[in-house]
Length: 400
Image 1 (cartoon, rainbow, N blue to C red):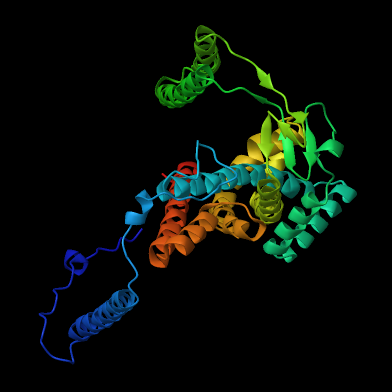
Image 2 (cartoon, rainbow, N blue to C red):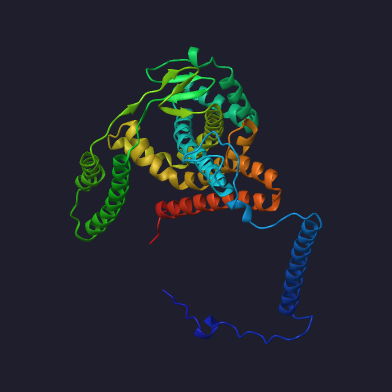
């Protein structure tokens, strides 16, 4: 067999030509054009800034964020933390941020579950189930989201009053005042138990990683479930019991013209959540369907040859591989849910956009108000992107 000898001199990097201060040198032209473009952009930014400052001074409009410490006098119907109109604008905007997160986080979870089920249903061998899922996807994606939000809000407003509320299940009431559900009376013991559960889950995750690493070295399996059971169940229950084991269910009751107690979901929040969930689930369903179809059919056949049931094949073989295709476009849908929640202003839900708009109308400081809205959505979107990119890198195939 003949062998080709490679001259080591051919592998050397060719020497760089000295930079000549001449327009004929392409590197000089590149530097000049970059300086020119940066200078033009800087001049435009400076002109916009100076023009804005001049106009604000002429109209005697105050600038800065000092208004955040002033009394808001703004009523807010829904708040996760205590609030009154005598609080500051900063606290009012914080309430708006929490209301936005409440919609975005719950919407992401529900849309993921609902969209995954619909995507799997469209691949079902059951003709009727597959067609129903297909019609849902095509219809829901072709209707504007704002129209769907107004539709759900109109439906909820057309429901009977609290005295004639729909009562499908004991403790659940649906009326034009929203959805009422039973809820536990939250106390410190529940907070301690929830914190213990979170720490236990984190410790279990590290323990599982260590167990897998040791198994790769010596081949001896180490069960993780006893540690998970102790850290995520026994420890939180023990802390909850040591703190008095409170467990009082707060049932909604009709008192006068409205319900008292329980968990209250206002018509505005319920309509927004329904609209965002159903709309985004249609897109997620197609992403899930595409991810499942991307898995080679031989994987299905190999898993079935091992005797796995169809449900086990989908859960243990197909979906873990499909995630590598699903996660990147799913990130975009999570971002869309967060950004589309700004349409809440159309149905009267007081999110960060609604409260910031009211704030800038009262204070006249529109630039600061818009800047706060942009900062909030930019921070949330970057956080979602960072987490999803980390997860995507974690499940990606690593080539040797």
